Image (cartoon, rainbow over all chains, first blue to last red; front, side, top):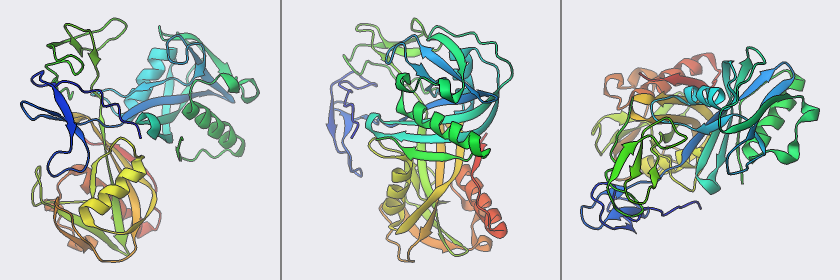
Amino acid sequence: MFNPRSIKHCRACGAPAQYRVPADDNRERATCTVCGTIHYENPLNVVGTVPAWGEQVLLCRRAIEPRYGLWTLPAGFMELGETVRDGALRETIEEAGAQVEMQDLYTMLNVVRVGQVHFFYRARLLDTHFEPGPETLEARLFREDEVPWDEIAFRTVKETLRHWFDDRRTGRFGFHAADIG
Amino acid sequence: MFNPRSIKHCRACGAPAQYRVPADDNRERATCTVCGTIHYENPLNVVGTVPAWGEQVLLCRRAIEPRYGLWTLPAGFMELGETVRDGALRETIEEAGAQVEMQDLYTMLNVVRVGQVHFFYRARLLDTHFEPGPETLEARLFREDEVPWDEIAFRTVKETLRHWFDDRRTGRFGFHAADIG
């Protein structure tokens, strides 16, 4: 189980924290030894899109770690102040500089090992002009037989791409939920 | 926009933190004034079920704040080490002591104002024996015309219930995504 246990000090007062099970709880939480503040740690959402242009999908080559140089769909951590869809659109603009029309939620993939849930929306590219941001080396379109399957940065991206190309053949894009080991 | 700005001290070293925009970022983050650790704050997932017994739905009357005494579907914060579905099942057992067969993801509701995303799965009750946990005063089944609509604890619960009873009339349970203002 993913458990960073990275909280050594209280966010409220700075005193040392210890992992212990609070009253009325059944899990260890970082608890302040002085003021008693309880610090919860919960899964994070990663949100992105599958930007499509006909039978081609837009991938971005990563300019940052982890997985520098590998290919990914535009995606990143969901921020406060936005919806899942807002965040997916923001990442598409930030990482690929792509203009898209957002479509339906397409995949929800649990990555329990790292405490994340990944969400990808389908999106329709409005043109093929891309302006990759600082986190992206290169953004380009791939047909299925061109996808660098051995150089995909994340399993959730590979799984989402496989579903997309499979569904495109049948012409029916359903919603897919799965757990990534 | 929801921004708790509640981090006053560094989780790593306990020194004071200040909100500032880190290099290569475009949002203020709590940053340690001594060791430089950056503390991210992100939305949280709330996960639950719509436990159904024929035309009836199981609701729980809250024994805790907020909304003590009001009715809710079983739901709570998703924990590290579980999937969205795992968490929804766990909350159903913890809050209602109900045995269910989990079905498909049913609603995803953004509550940007409080930095949360709520997920409800459809679930089929296996029997009508409930054992409410310490967070629940009472757990019971409601037909649509019995639901205490003015005493529902959360708007995401009300929205999910309305969809469920509407969909039940048509016999088609789709997936519903919405943003709660």
